Amino acid sequence: MTPEVIHTTTFVDDAVRIILASARDAIAERGIFRIALSGGNTPAPVYKQWAATAGDLPWDRVQVTFGDERCVPPDHEQSNYLMARRTLLDSVPIPPGNIFRIKGELPPAHAAAECEAQLAQVASRFGEPRYRHDLLLLGMGPDGHTASLFPGTEALKEQTRNVVENFVPKVNMWRVTFTYPLINAARHVCFMLQGADKKPIVDQILAGEGNYPSAGVKPTDGKLTWLLG
Picture 1 (tube, rainbow, N blue to C red):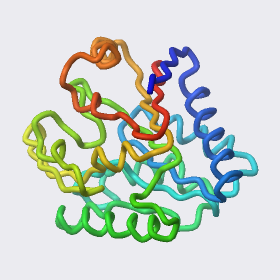
Picture 2: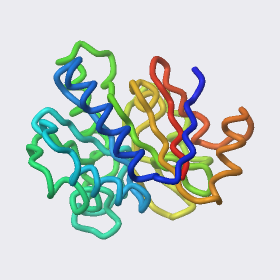
Picture 3: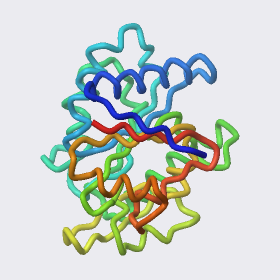
Picture 4: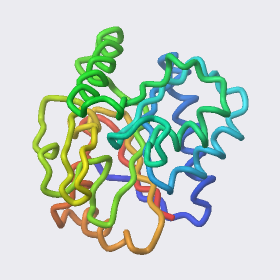
């Protein structure tokens, strides 16, 4: 599987184009669009434009998950869910039951187990061995982490579970994160990155070098895109 690398000067436009194309294809083929949202600052303008330009997208057929979450309440300024709610979810008619929030206010292990069970229930309904996203959006930190898969943390070793609690010594904080098995089960994974500081790490990963967590993202039966602004 050779990744698609897109260098763009119209980052937000191209990101929204990828999302809407994936949504329309998934709904046409399977009747539902399952997307995992990424946190951080980079996706915020993308989500705002998606909400503004979605047109006649049938939001009742869109199912939203989150690649990771900080262990904070949903109204906390560091919450990935809060960012998505402000930029996207409050602006579109998506049914609340279609939003699978990671409950960061719960003890980390409980939050991970509840999210895992919710995804397993949907996967079972579709006859899937593992929940399969149509599009899974990811960012990448300056240390090469993605979701909350940080260098040297236990979650990198997980080979069975889809969602785990992960203590991150670097920030002295628990996180809840999707694991490689779940990420790599997606039909399409798209890294959305901006900034020249990420280029050296991206170059190493694309060359098959380095031991960064983001290098472990390798869809087993899907597409991988790097959108670089």
